[in-house]
Amino acid sequence: MSTASRERKPRFALRMTLMLIATLLVFGGVFAVKAIIGKQMNEFFDNMPQPAAAVSAATATVERWSDDGEAVGTLVAVNGTEVTTEAGGVVRAIEFEPGQPVKAGAVLVRLNTDNEVATLKALESTARLAEVQAERWQQLGKDQLVSLDEVQQRVSAAANAHAQVEAQRALIAQKTIRAPFSGELGIRRVNLGQFVSPGDPIVTLQQLDPIHLDFALPEQYMDKLRPGTRIRATVDALPGREFEGEVTAIEPRIDPSTRNFTAQATLANPEHLLRPGAFARVRFSLGGEREVVVIPQTAVSFNPYGNAVFVISEVPRKEGETDMQGNPLTGNKLVVTQRFVRTGATRGDLVAVVEGLKPGEQVATSGLLKLRNEAEVTINNEIQPAADPEPQTQNR
Image 1 (cartoon, rainbow, N blue to C red):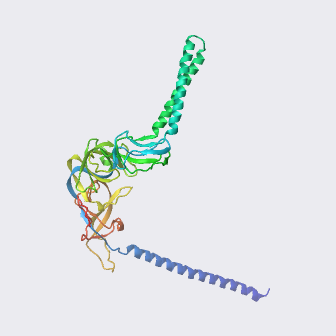
Image 2: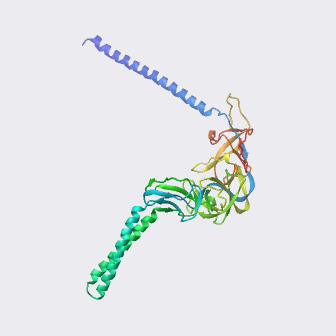
Image 3: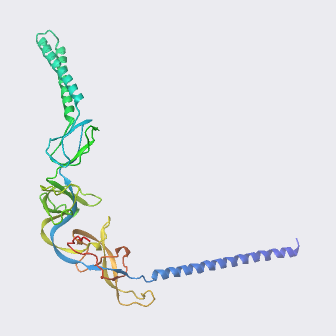
């Protein structure tokens, strides 16, 4: 190998090394510049002032509430059923009018029983013969002309024949469909000549007087509400009418999904104005008065994991705070802090706060979805949410 070739190789390697170093420096500089710019942008957005959220606000006040309660519920018949048939057959007679009141035991429908009656006559004849034979063999047994085992077989056969007669009579009775209790009939579901199978609906029967009212209450009423507590109920179909009754049963179990329990009241309904399935509003008094902290219900975020409010407070601004245009801000500002509370009874648009809020504290009553902890707010009470303890329905 010549001397010139040996000299060119180190020079070529040196050039390649220098080019690689230069390339790394260029790419490293690009990445460094991007990282610096990204960091500065993040710092800018982190420190960028957020516009204050506009909310309406209300002050927690102390009111004297009688220890009353309100709820909504559903009217339920004391007894209500779809009258059906236990045995299948062809409808021979319909002995009721839709909508009429009936007494317990009244005949509603008769099914054809010709075959069953004929079978009954044959079974009765067989039973009479078996009874005569049993008596004859018993006499022979006393004279020791037949064995005791033969006598017992004849007596057993007679008893079995009588049982078959009773079973056939029961089948015939099932084909006469009667009202199981006193009440008011609904719309007829069968026609003359129609074949009905066991379980087919014949007519609806509802006992209307008295009538039950089932309603749900928060668990804090569990130790206060008692059987015998007087209640007042109203229904939308009868504005201005109020119906009185009393609590007759309380469900011992609290629903874990809603933390409510169910109570049942019984109301007199002699005019049959209240109907099963209707919506009703319930009011009841537990006696006595107490002071409660009250806020509008719109101020409370009701969640499965707990109820919360956004409390508004005034705090000094941090040094260097600016507005959206970069102008320095001084003085105090309004911020919200989320706080969990325990709520109690409701009255119209208001709710009592049992724990977590003091009288005089301000809470946000609108715009809760756009709020977060320590967010700055401005108060605009030009339009306030409803806060009426006794709101009235308006027909428009």
